[in-house]
Image (cartoon, rainbow, N blue to C red; front, side, top):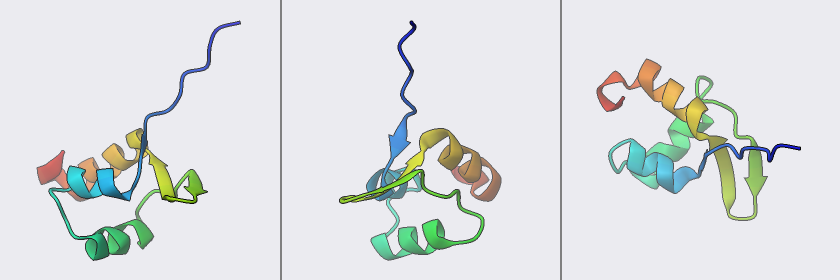
Length: 66
């Protein structure tokens, strides 16, 4: 049986960095918005998203950061 590949995951901190070092408040606003991908899990340390989903959102909504 082939090993399952793990999706690359991002937390809010990594998303903040990926978006140019935005504030925690701004990251919360964006990730809570209707167009942002839904997190795949909510852990004790916070929500996590699939990196591919976040990158697709960035390409569409923040093309200067793609």
